[in-house]
Structure formats: structure tokens, C-alpha cells
Image 1 (cartoon, rainbow, N blue to C red):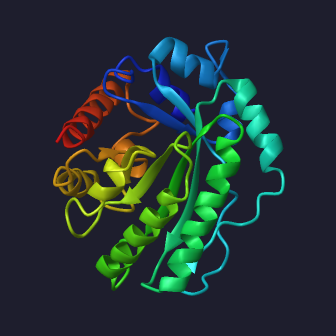
Image 2 (spheres, rainbow, N blue to C red; image 1 turned 90 degrees about the horizontal axis):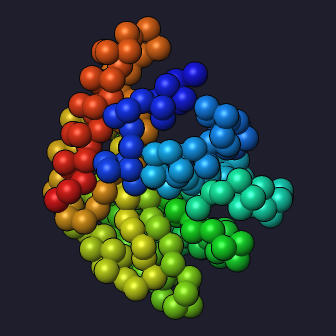
Length: 244
């Protein structure tokens, strides 16, 4: 199992990796005899998060909202029992439609409050499609909507944002500096690892939350030596890009 092979590797540890986002099935499994979330924290000092969204609706007003999550409360209760720290929920912006982007942000904060009520920390992920023709305008509208959403939180309601690396470097600095923001992390969004790291390094304080770019070059067919070397190279490259 590729995920287990990555997690148990000696190059995968909390000195360079802050957190890991798990699928529901991965949360329910064990690694080396321990539930995955407990293994990550107790053995690797990596903070476990859970992906909670159930996919996307069809595009409307230039965006794709998250599908309904009628069983969310029960899933969050299971996450708490499993030792999960927080959650991640993704929706996608494809066009600079103000109403659509506002709907995305409203939904993200609504789900975020449900997560916070369970004592978990939500990662709100309103992704801007890197292929959007008006990506920079999408990001300007998103910034304004995020700041409005943050202003409505109570002091103890603190969130993390997972955002597309902006076309204008440091655009999200106001979000990062807001008292209710714990972290702003960057998704790789289809960029190669080289390109994602180069763009990320231009954004001070933003750290990587890469999936495809992180696992780029890893293969189940690799020898343990090659697998470890590739994982070490990828981790170090992304760590350095996150350290600006």
C-alpha cells in the first residue's frame, strides 16, 4: 500500500512534515498495529487531518460547490475518537463570478463552523483552478470574501486555509496575518513539483500542502533504496520552498 510505504519510511517525519491528510478508509486502518492517526502522531510527530468532503457538484456560477454531507456529524465524532486533529474540505473556483465565489466561501465557513463545534480544526480549501482564464481576478474576489468570512468568526474560532498559489505573490498575506488564521497552506493544483516549489517560494510564510507534487516520482516498483532517496529529495525540496 503506497500510503503506508510512505508513512513508515524513515524520511517521513515531523521535523520536515507538519501534517498529513487522510482519506476516511485510511483513518479506519492500522499501521504497524496502531490506528493510522495515532501512528502518525505518536511515532512520526505528524498531525493527522481527515478529508471530509464527498466530491463536487456540477459547475454553476463559475464554481463547483461541495456535495451535501448528511452524515458529517457522525463522521466528525469518529474522527475525534480516532485522534484526528482537523479536517479538509475542497471546492473549486473556475471563473471570476462574484456570486459563485461568495457561495463557495459561505459553504466553506458553514462546514468549518460545524467542524469547530466538534473541537476539530478545519482546513478550508476553496481551490482556484490553475487553468482559469481569469485566475488573478478569481483570487482577488476570493481574498475579499475570505476576509469577510474571517471577520464573522468569534475569537476562539481558528481555521487553516488551503489555497492555490496566487498569481500575485503574497496576495494572501492579509489572510495569513488575521488573528483567526492558524496557517495558510498551498495546494499544488496540477503544477509539477519543480514549478509548484518555485511559485511557493515567492510567497513568504505560505507552506506546502502538496499531494501529487509530493508523490511525484514515487513508484511501487522502486527498490527501498530508490524509494527512500526519491522521498527524501521530494520532502527536502518542498520543505525548503516552504521555509521562505
